Length: 289
Image 1 (spheres, one colour):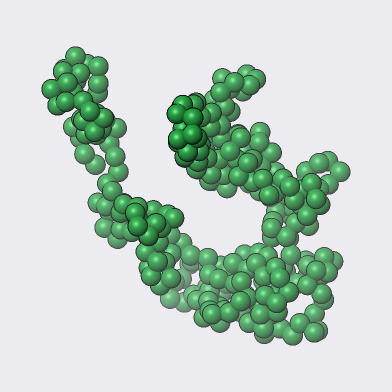
Image 2 (tube, helix red, strand yellow):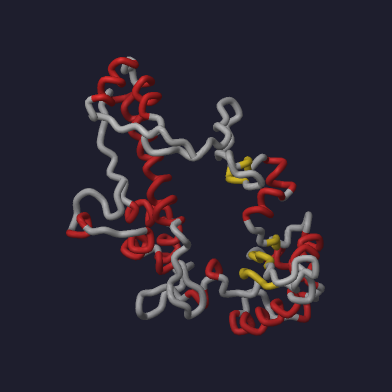
């Protein structure tokens, strides 16, 4: 797995990071809102989605093909390739006009539904919770379909018959301001109760600790305790396989800490491993986190 791929232009020999890879792939242009500059989504799109996930998919595809041909093959997993392929629907929507494009060829984020252009697709600041002074809490809104938008208006106490049409783009800025004022009239947790068990597509924005404690995530065991870190949680393996579920989180690995175990699993005897270590062919770490 590489950033720019094996082969190609001089980029293949250049250093880079997630932001660079999704920039060259054309994907970074989609991560904007309004007239703001492109904003990389941490290292999610390149490193994890375009890199690790696509590499795992490549390995699985090669294993399936090997059953037919009996031959192996090299998997050239470039984050540039993986990032834009992961976002294939966005590129196709751009071609059909669903993603608005300006004269300069860049996406017009201020008109694109999935870039939070309309009032019914955005994140709103809520009233400060007296029990949590100094914290800024938000609600996530994305009521795209009319029937869901209707439920959203109902929860906000608005009469749809007296408002501009949902897809009246000229009204979006004013409606967004009105929504913002309404959301700041209650705390996030109060809004969460109002929209619970509705189809309004309006849910609270949780931080990682809150997400681990949320009843839905707890019931699904979406998070597991982090080994060696009391009170902390991390995502559990996904997807969940009924017959062969993933392992619970393990302590963080130490580079070289599993040398003996791995080589023995591959058929090396304990004596062979010991000799390789003694001769300096292998490295081993004695420390544990």
